Length: 300
Ligand code: HSE
Image 1 (tube, rainbow, N blue to C red):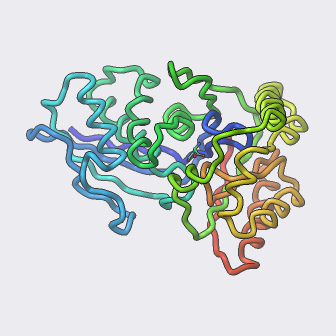
Image 2 (image 1 turned 90 degrees about the vertical axis):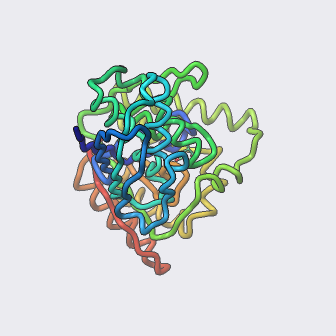
């Protein structure tokens, strides 16, 4: 018995919603193949496309740990699983690479066993993958990768996840510059305290973005895609951040910010023509300082 599953990349935070907002894109993403084996235990047989950089040891691999924790939970450690992971996205990119592998793994094993758990119950296992990859079990990449669409993590304890309706036409431009930012480092540099003034501004934008997506109201979405807490700190890790953002806005994007912990940047647009134009302008801005990049346009 064998199964192959694809899990998509995700944009976490979505400007104002640090650790609580995320949405899935069409591509890139990761593919995993699981094969049942007579020998109990989870084994990473092969990883293709990571240039040998990801851990092959099951307990240190995001997909491996997610599958292992899942099998323990459902009392099926008697099962043997061989894993082949095809990384089809860059590492350390802010595109939710570790999350996509964990989600693909846990989704695949649950399907292979005839779906003993409902899909939403798979989240905690995928979050375990995040914990070993980035040192924190945040859900804003795994939840949208697993459930699709735009997701709000209303609470972590207990876990409370809500899917939000998005406008019939809304496009995401993702630009991945060829540099790497480690999520652990990008979390470490954040301040632990936030001023009341910034909290009020951020809460207004969080509420405004959700209302804007659900109404839908593009003007409100645009005004709400603002982050006064995280972006000012993390943007120093991204060369030409301000220029790239200005290029997106000048070409008609509704808003632009860091994708997850960076260095990728995302922009939202009303139509695909704008989304493509925005991508070209952002790429050009990176290129002006010699940084090459890759662009992905998806409908949300
Ligand atoms: N919310 C997480 C962070 C996402 O910004 O650190 C990491 O991809």
